[in-house]
Length: 532
Image (cartoon, rainbow, N blue to C red; front, side, top):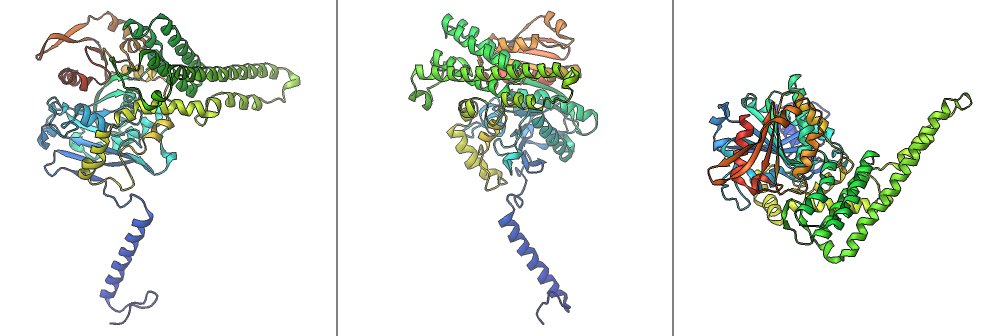
């Protein structure tokens, strides 16, 4: 045989075959070196078919990780129309449903990989999704691909749902519910509405039945305004301290009214900080508990912590004053432009002033230093607290090894900090209007609230519900509350009020994480939600 000549004639098909295989090997080597994550398998599953997991690219460079468990650990139940499919969304934003929701709350195994007695898998197929992209095992290839708004999160979730049900035709007729917790509720409010619209247009093939908003961040300001009086009623602060807390809450409301959303986020952090200072670190997830002081608190005296909160307040107040002056100037310019001699004037200068006065995600308060510190305080509390050492070790150890498809450059929780920070300008925006619109479609909406939750307290939830413009609200208000009992206890465990397609559950003796705090009641709640 002669040598292969790339530019000359080839006289033997064996030479062609060897050349083609060489080209394939060289191309594969180049891709492995230069293209991150592209050669990684994107699907996996248990040999018995009881579990599936994988990645879905919801848009270019944005990869959503999901994990599906089939109820009763058998595929036979897929064809049983009485077994619903539940999609669980965690909060944060940046907390992992695949990790925390799965192993700490409702999945088949606990953090020690022992069977959970009251897993929701007894009643439904469970689908955990790490969302927004960058959360948990989900990842983006570039930081610019992280989401900045709730609308972007909803769009990604609709894209995921479309792909998921297209790949799982056996589940398309299965009753489908979205159940969530904390910030996951804010995401679900808009996602549920957009999913319904996509189903109506034939863009997503699923039997979408309803949502359940668990201790959800639907209207942030209603919660912030409720904290002071609630804490006082639990003897955790006195009247003077309540007034001080209310000062910060009122300032947060003024920031929102001025559309200064990142300033409102800073004030939210300052309000929580002053509450923790006065109450000796009350646990925002359970009013009856106190959290160990974090390292930053250990290094600061009480007076120093109060001074930090006051500094945030003063800085935001100055910024809001600039906003007010800019708007006054803008209004004055509009009036002058009505006069003939000023027809050539432009409001471009005032627009620039207005934009500069309003907060931006790059730097909202005092050049961004206080804002960055505020966001870091919030992230530590609402993301890191759910990413404990045992869970981190489990997810980045045995679970990562089991899954077998996680790219080498992706670590569970590795992008959560960026996820949280990118959404800082969206934290304090309400989604009450999205829930109203979802109710108007006839989709089942369940709201449930743990009695001992502080961050998304029951009084705050009732406040945003009563502010709703949903036409069925009056009828719902007139409905009678009903007690709920479970076999395991002779005591009332919850109350429910339901009318039309809205149900509200008061869950007793539970904090922010209802399924973890009262697992028997949580399982009963799931039964009622999916039976509605």
